[in-house]
Image (cartoon, rainbow, N blue to C red; front, side):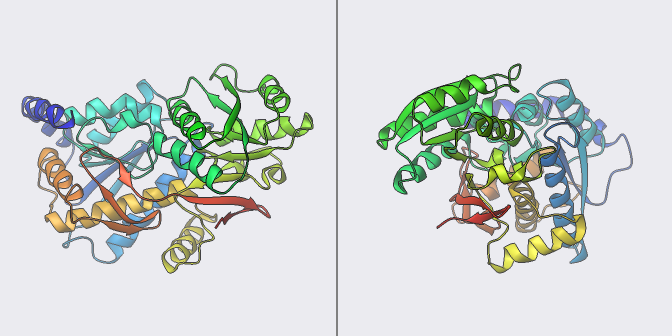
Length: 387
């Protein structure tokens, strides 16, 4: 499927090449390799976008301070798309094109990514998303994920809960209006049942009803759920934890990477997150040298501990740099040539990358990454790795 779309895309690229060149030529052409990124820098999901922007800039600075790649330096431009799944995401993408973007590190959220994947494909710009995890974002041959796909997160969560005997009776509360949440939910429920877990209730909400969770919490409590699985973002999860306490309900809570950020949610009592478990590709308290060095550098630059969104973005820039070096990519190449070279390099059977978010990470033509998740628990107000 991706190969067929690629052939069509190459034809489109030839037709649009003049327009694409004109976009890059709106100003003087950069002598650096230009990476564009977009994500929410304002709004309720800003923690995600700011983390990605900060970590990407940190990686670019480290690369440039070391002399660049094959003597060429990187240049990062980042636009605020407010996690919007429509015009704001498209406007951010177009703004990056106007600034000469040659490689796209984005977008941060799934909805925004789905809004621009056809554009990046038609423009033949290599797209590498740090955290848009829906399977559909990588349906075109030019887009790859650094994060896990939603189905993989659902499967891995169900496996971990079952294999470690965390609970037998499980409730799920998910956002049926969100592609990220629904994608994880569907796979989790199927896999949980295969693993012998009893899914006692499945409760949904939508973007228009995500402040009062009393009905969902009551249903989980009445059904006797020992664990509530939350394949949602930290904003809604913080409300569920607060409202569960008010309802006198204290099950175990388990989530995925969307829960990363809950400890710094505004007006939330972080002590309520004590004991919450989640699967994530990155644990800031890991004792390996690479993680410690990254956390120290990030804290020095931005005054806070990096989350997994930051780690994925940092890995993303470093991976791009390794591929650029390998393929001897230069700033004078057009986006189509760069895209084709990066696709060939990242899907090569002998390519792998050891990063903050995984060892021996590999990609095939599907665009999905192969790496193992880490389980963490919130303990004493911090993320701690689970065995």
